[in-house]
Structures are given as C-alpha cells and as structure tokens.
Length: 124
Image (cartoon, rainbow, N blue to C red):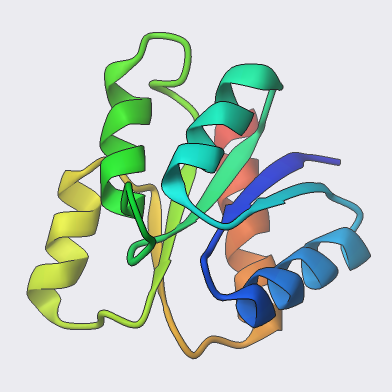
C-alpha cells in the first residue's frame, strides 16, 4: 500500500489517524510539527502527506506551500486536516496546494476513504 506522512501536534489525533491508516494497510510516519514533516519528506519517499494546519513552528499551510515549491515534492498529494471550517479557511488550504481538506472532528472511516480516493487519483 502507500507510505503516508501524518503531521499533527495533537498526539491523540496523530495516533488515531496512524492506527486507522495502518489498519488499512498503509505504512505511516507520524510527526508532531511542520519542521519534522519536512525532514521526513526529504529523507524518505512518500505517497501522501496529511498535515494539520495549526502546528507549532511551520503550519500545515506553510509545509504544503514548501512542498509545492520544490520540484521533487510538487506533485506529492497533500490532505489538510484542521478544525478551521470557514469557507475562507478552506479556500486558503486549496490555494496553498492541498488536494483535499478534512475538518475536525472527522470520522476515521471518512478519513480512510478520502486518503484512498486521493491515492487512486494519483495512480491514474
């Protein structure tokens, strides 16, 4: 299956997402902030990044913009996960280059379905 990065400063959410994706057969790398996320992206091949928007240091939006600006990661699928649900927040997420946007709280089944949908689009 896919190798997925999860970056979220909330350990409970990070663990829940990691558990669900591992249960679905994916390999998971889980980190607590944006700088650690960029280190993982540079150190190992990934198929997808799940980024919380509100993290200390670099936000998920910052990480997404950084990924989009680098030739080696410009096409890496990114899903933003956040409690920010206003229309303007969603627009900012897509403007930063996100492929999808999931609002907390979310269903683990929905998360898994969205991950699989994004991965399926990339494989085509």
